Length: 507
Image 1 (cartoon, rainbow, N blue to C red):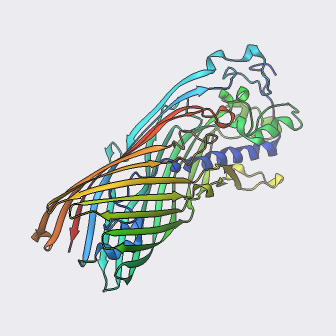
Image 2 (cartoon, rainbow, N blue to C red; image 1 turned 90 degrees about the vertical axis):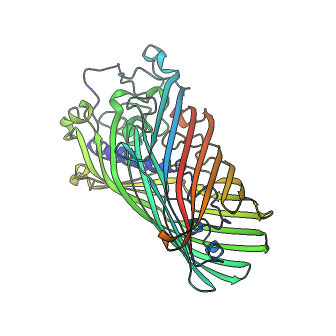
Image 3 (tube, rainbow, N blue to C red; image 1 turned 90 degrees about the horizontal axis):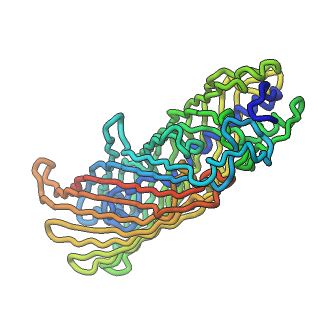
């Protein structure tokens, strides 16, 4: 096939119809994958953990609620966090590509059609932003409450942000086939009940309702779809091609097959369940273990796919098929949020010093595929038995990850100051890593401090502490040379930060 033929190939009607379904489903399924790298940097404060005596135990370890209110009736942690994200991607093309306005569909592509400028460094893509509402950074809530019900039982409540991101890249940047922009925000309302089985042992259970929304834009490369491969290979075209999920770089990222899509806003909800144990083998040593189980979040919303190219709007009319320049419909995307296990230890060295550690294991390997369902009247072909719905699974193959954080705290009668150092491993393998899942081994630093004002009449005589907290996660530069089919090779860096201001009130 010559580059830019006067007459474009035709396609069979059923193949082209299913192609649109596959394109949209693949796009939507890929979208929520960014959650692997974009969890909120901290829930509670940097000192919160599976053994911390603060109301954020609702999230970290429900068994610790009884320890929070051992000596008092109730305690509040009320505040907000400002979340910031910076992603940088330097693309390195290791494959070879033809000129983007060509129509060579079968590899190997003749040398004269190859574009020497599309091999090697392909430029940088950078995005930085706060979670915001319009132009103003939006504070993410941190609200936790613990209350003693009687000598044996205690109650905890919480409202917080477990995931959040807002990024906008250059629409025509080297990352556009993975992501152009994304807006993600989830909130959780949780409750926990803790039972003191003995003076040094407590157990707890809890659960939460998670709701969120997502919107994203990207460019879909139709050369990666198996139905595009079949549409051209089957009669009446009979045109050999190299399309499909294993398409080589030589036939990818062609202008005619690069279709923009806008997804959302899509809204979803889920729930989480937690159990925990807290045990003090010695008066100054606290141990804690908790497990959080989560069910998939199902996002539902609309999509818009730009099909404004003669290949889709004009060239198939003779075969009885014509797509509108803009295809619209409804989408349902299921994202399997991984469960996790937390383990902690805290040692009170003396009246001033505490040291401790928290280790977490995230079972990300449950995310082997992401599923999407689509619904659109523009996909219906009654005579072919094709209805309004289509479904597809997209492989992800994430890995389990572990987090290790060590903490130290110095406390006086009036103030306290603490620090956290940590290391977290990565979930996304080289094969599926891209700017929609910006992930990698990361180092963690947190600093927290507060001042106690004592009893305050304005809050009913409660003891008031003001707390300031900074938590930063830095993904070490990750050079990827193993991306499937050269989709996203290059170097990635990520900075995720949260600044929290809170009031801690004890009655």
